[in-house]
Image 1 (cartoon, one colour):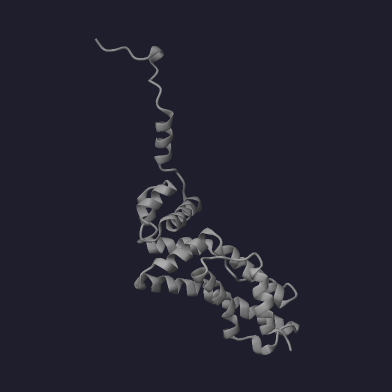
Image 2 (cartoon, helix red, strand yellow; image 1 turned 30 degrees about the vertical axis):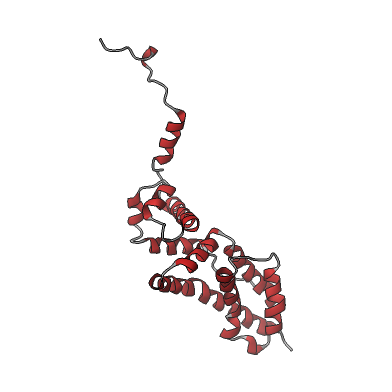
Length: 217
């Protein structure tokens, strides 16, 4: 004789912990930008918590609660995924408005990137700089130059040219060498000082280094 089930034909109550685990393991139905943002956030988190060598497409997919196929449809390798994740997160320096002085404009630009250094993207940059082997480092270096360094330098030169027209920047200061100072200092902080930024770093860099370098005699 078959054993009778629970009264009323109801199934036996399931362990709530097991139910929660199963729910978290199931892929979440997301598409487009929402899914992409979740993947990028998972990639940067996995990178900063475990390092590049331990980062896997499978681990990112699990953390983003999506299928591995969703990643491989977009990115052929984890390097491509990491570069796109950084590209989506790092600020873009173009379009610093006319604030009436080169000092104010340079300060706004530096504060934009000091904030980024303290973010998940900044932590990921620090990990990559300390871990990538030579061949992969060259690919990543190309991305950093094109996506971060050159746009910052172009924006600085625009600010300096505007300052010359305004009269608060000497004409000789509009040079690529002067424009190198800010990205070089930011990169130095990321690589050597473990992203350590004093609260007044941006103000000191502008007032102690840049303003004496660019101002009219």
